[in-house]
Length: 188
Image (tube, rainbow, N blue to C red; front, side, top):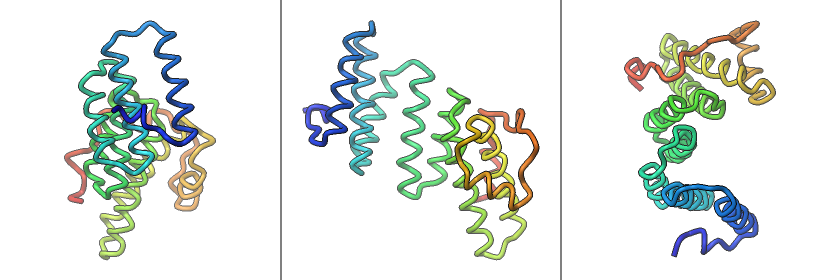
C-alpha cells in the first residue's frame, strides 16, 4: 500500500488530500502523477525519519519526473537525507544537481554553505588554519548568494558574514551556479 494511503497524522493526511485534489484538477500525464506520488511518499517517509524508504521513493520519482524544476526539489531532498546521515560529500553532489536545474534555490545554497562552514570548523580543530580559511571563503560565497536570493532569510549566516568581515555591499553574480568546485573540494 502506498505511504500516502497509510498517513496517520493530521498534517500528512491534509497534505495528501490537497495534493490529490490538485492532481485531479490539473491536466497532467499519468507519468507526472506517478512521479508526484513517489515524491509525496518520499517526503512523508523523510519526515518520519524513514530515510531508506524516502530514498527509494525519490529514486522512483527521479526516474519518472522529466521537469528540471521539479527534479531540483527531488535532488534537494536527497541532499537533505545525506546531510542528516553525515554524508556531506554525497549531500553536496545532490545540492549541486538541484542548483544545476534550479539556480534560485536559496535553501540548497545555504546547506552547501553550512557544510563548508562545518568543514572549516573541522580544519581549525586539526590546526589547519589555511584550509579552514578556504572552507570559510567557500561558505561565505554560498551564503552571499543565498542572501541575494532571499535577503530576509539566514540571519545567522548574515551575522557571521558581517562579524568575520566577509560581507560585501552587494551580491550580484557571486557564484557561477552549476559549476561548483567539485574537483577542488580541498580533500575533505
